[in-house]
Length: 85
Image (cartoon, rainbow, N blue to C red; front, side, top):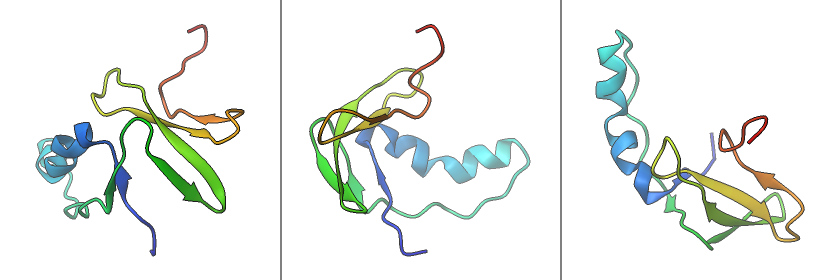
């Protein structure tokens, strides 16, 4: 697909066990690709010309990471934020 796979180092065990875990639920999946890059707090990437900085946001996942725009106005937080939190 021409995309880069990036994740926090804390998610490597989850990535490496994905196929085994899927089988526990009766699902067969291809082994996920190795990450192209590991992202940690303060790491910077560019996506579509937009600068993003990594912000570690662990919770139910030890490698939770959010991405904040260079101007600090937008945060891509995944499931780190919930209504009323």
